[in-house]
Amino acid sequence: MPIIVHLDKLLLDRKLTLTELADRVGITIANLSILKTNKAKAVRFSTLEALCRELGCQPSDLLEYVEGPPSPDAAEEI
Amino acid sequence: MHYGRASTRRAARRVEWGALMNLLGKGSVAWWIKLILDVAWFALLAIFVLLTLVAVVGALKPGGTDHQIEMGVRIEPDETQYKIAAPEWGVADAKVVEAQGKVRFKNPGGAHAAALMAWSNAMLFIALFSVYHLRRIFKALAAGEPFDPANASRIRWIGLALIATQPMGFLMRLAFARQVQDAFHAEGIKIAPAWGFNLVVVLFGLMLIVIAEAFRIGAEMKKEQDLTI
Image (cartoon, rainbow over all chains, first blue to last red; front, side, top):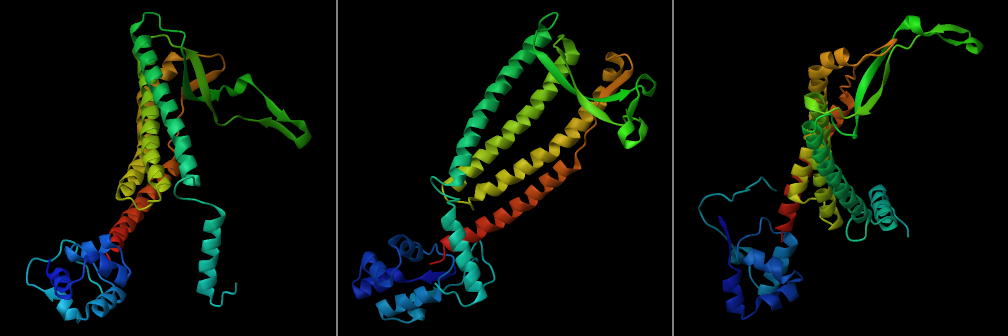
């Protein structure tokens, strides 16, 4: 998938566990795990905002675009 | 509670209706319908197995069986044999222009009776097939999952099965028309197979196929929503 989520790296740098981050951000561990493993189809701005706030980072630190084959269900979204 | 905007008021009405009647999920209306369909399924299955056995025995046993066969027919009475009047209405002479009904007779055995029974069983099989899929749909609804991806396919199959009954029935009656007319004799009336190609059933089947497509799109949207964090 072209969009990579660097949640693992950021959690390690901030010395946070997935559970702690899930509690602070207010989403379930299962959903955070989906994000971490790059299986998510979309991320809400509100979730991105909460992640950046709790991890003290910019969206560009969290998300990276890598050249590659498009996602299987790529759709036009605004 | 005051609801200012029209859209908020509409949303409030939807919430109240949902609270009045538990439609999806455990113990809901869907759950009870699923229970009824379960009973119907097993009852239909038992009838199907029984009728299949009766049909096989009836075809093989010389002289047939005591099982009664019913066949839908058109009845064309001889106009010279009857007079219908309604004097209070000022009607002196009315005519029967179309009469449909059934003839019932003891299974005589042999190829014709076997074909009739095979036809009845084919219709019963379609009913079983439809109830099977309907059960699965309501199982998903009772679990609170209306947009189960398989539901689209199940609704489509029910629509196709409904549509299939009409040309099947028409062809069956066409194949047997001459034989029924030649075989059944009665004083003053002519008996012919009932034609009955019901366009309403075909239209309903098409509606279900369109609704199935809406469910497919709904399932895709739900899948997208589930993977939106």
